Amino acid sequence: MPDLLIRNGLIIDGTGNPGYYATVAVDGDTMRILRGDTSDLESGRVIDATGHVVCPGFVDLHSHGGLTMLREPLNEPKIRQGVTTELIGIDGNSAAPFKNRDDLEAFVELDSGLNDIMPVGRDWRSVDDFLSLFEKTVSPNIAFILGNSAVRIWSVGWNDRPATGAQMEDMKSVVREAMEEGSFGLSTGLDYPPGSYADTNELIELSKVAAEKGGFYHTHTRHSLMMNGHLAPFEEAVEIGRGSGAPVHLTHYRQPDQGVGSHLDYLGLVEKSRDEGLDVTFDVYTYRFGGTRVLIQLPNWTKDGGPERVKEVLRSQEERKRAKEDMLSGTRKLNTDETWLTAFRKPHNAQYDGLSVAEIARKRDQDPFDALFDLLLDENLGISAVLGGTNAQTLPAFVSHPYGMIASDAILFGEFPSPRTYGCFPVVLAEFVRAEKHLRLPEAIRKMTSFPAQRLGLRDRGVLRDGAKADIVVFDPDRVKAPTTHRQPKQFAQGIPYVIVNGQVVVDNDVLTKATPGVVLRHGR
Ligand SMILES: [Zn+2]
Image (tube, rainbow, N blue to C red):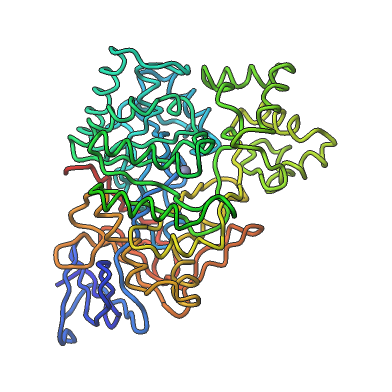
């Protein structure tokens, strides 16, 4: 007798094929599809999915939820969207491995506006130690990708300098070991020091090791290359794939702004690379608003040495002046009106949460740069920023392109995150599919399920078929909705009454069960 039957739903299996009617039977953590009359079949529990779609759980290839989940294991903003697997370690910023506690703490501090502060009472060094913290302790499944910032801190340190031959060999062994411990590949975030201090050749050499072990190269590309043309950052990524043999995944791929080329240039680069025989894919988030640690806006030289160096700069009037000058020019100018700050942790700064740098400066009667620098010092660097930087007019072309997946880049702390944190996946179903018809429903589901699962190399997730793991979403295609907005972001998805992870119901008729059935998925196992 199965533990659970899901009856009367339209099964859209994740492959992109149209739906069909059948019953899904869940036994333990595994599913079977039953066709024909199953009315005589008994089971522990029945979910009636009449009028609903039954599809695989969503696989998010850009998650910043790792450390936050160690504090908030239910991952509610994401689970309520139907996300059942989270890939953590993105943008070069993986929280493992570290040689010692000092490096780990310094890294987490530098990165705390993006990936949260150290969880109280936790400790780890290796990838394996870190991953074991998530085994059946959180609601979604966790997959990990090794970040090259951690690799560089391990072998080269915090400074902007080329790796020596011995350091290169050492970094390769760090990558090899992480792959053996279950990493799905190598990630970079080439606007985030110290990983951004790696040159193209270093990244080719490290990606070769990941590729030999079946891993892929997941990249937030090097924005500073924009001075060589709007495609130059992405051309570097393709070059790394060509040189290393690693599949290349361009993350949060989009046209950054009106007039920065045409969206056809960006999509054409991916198509051309694939025509050449390279395995290049991309993901995109589905709102105009991005978000990251606000430190990204400070010039790279301010971080040459780690978080202590940043604070030294912020305490020096002379170096502040130099930083400000750099932030008024170059490829990454600070837009004080369109940089909204969040994730203040000191109660006396709560008044600034959600306001733009310009608004905060007016409130404090201060120069915007000084306001930002003072707050960064007061908050121990851990401020998040919500930013523009996506051309909303061309976003549908990325969301509906066959080589693209949906991934959230969601930051889960702060009172005013980007709306993508609460709405990235359901807004596709509600707006891009149902209302605007940019793509068909089975295709949209493919981009959230089997396609990311294929990128990772998962054997038994991302599709509904006999023997697959029972990660399942039941949603109402007419009612599913993402009410989140830029000004009122913390609003849960609607119209997704059931979410199941490894056969256990985690959202039950719209109620969170607080179950934590998530397992750690290890590459190659
Ligand atoms: Zn990110």
